Length: 170
Image (cartoon, rainbow, N blue to C red; front, side, top):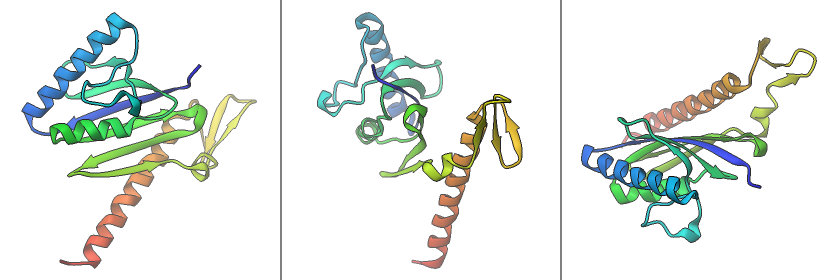
């Protein structure tokens, strides 16, 4: 049985493209419910994998939550973004394999930011108190800790990019 990776993607772009993506996802949601199996947009090669399961969309914005088997399906999201000329931010987690990260696709460039083993070693679980210990504080769950660690990596990456841009004027 597969471990399930939780995903959330927010597409950004012009309204026409976003409406086309929403239409594709509406179709996939409907097919998933009737066929009881994972779905891919019809322009994605099934051999590439990355099927969408348990797709949830709250009508409105172009934000979707879904499950994938074992790991995130960023390659599929890039193909969708390229087809519709949009950007996206993709958050994912599968804690059985210590996957926790964010993919940002902007202006045709993919940036992936993942927590690594060193990040996961920055906090500990205390069996006696059933809490997580991180930087002198106790937490009932590791969710806030993981988000803090990821946001720090994102911020650090953005600061490094800014430094590079400032040091290499065109």
